Amino acid sequence: MLKYLKDFKKFIAVAGFKDARITDLDQFFENVRKTLAPDVEFQLFDARLVATFDHLFFASLNALTAFKNQENISKSLAMEIMLYASGQRQIRKAMKLIGIKSNTQEIAVLVIGEDAEKVNSAFTQIGNFANAKRDDGVLDLTEDKIEVIQRAFKISNEEIEAVMKNNDLKEAVKKLIIERVALLSTRR
Image 1 (cartoon, rainbow, N blue to C red):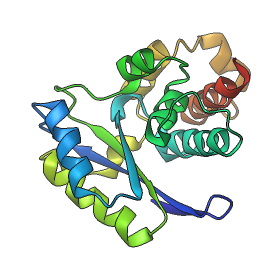
Image 2 (tube, one colour):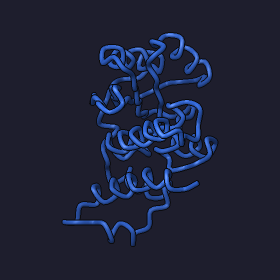
Image 3 (cartoon, one colour):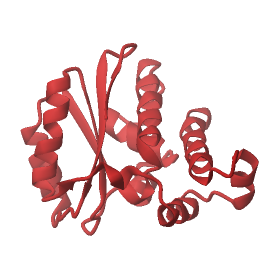
């Protein structure tokens, strides 16, 4: 899904990939960086810990706002997005929680840039380097994924009950994740 962020004059897109086979993460990132346009930034996440497009969209908005207000933690926008998406202030913890590992097979890819065509073409290049098939379904919340997210982000059943409406567990979990994303900016 591609969205234009008028306030920041940037396009943001998120896509899912399955059956990824990345054996050397450092080489993978180096290859992707060399190939993408210089004004395009990207970040990869373990899709099992991404609570839909909205999760990464709101992490991006918060990261862009942090840079705009000169309140960013990281020097890079891509890493700032990782911090917000994980709800962590430390890069190492963020990467451990929601970053990809060499055995990650389902990945969420976020690309941000000023040109829609360059942003969209980045997915093809990243998918090729990851030997992965495009499948945005890996971004969807499933019962199994909710359990994994709940454990990783330490979401209690009481929190879910407090925000759940109409027995919509998926929406409740998504709201709680977005809340954690937003709360990172309040922790100094």
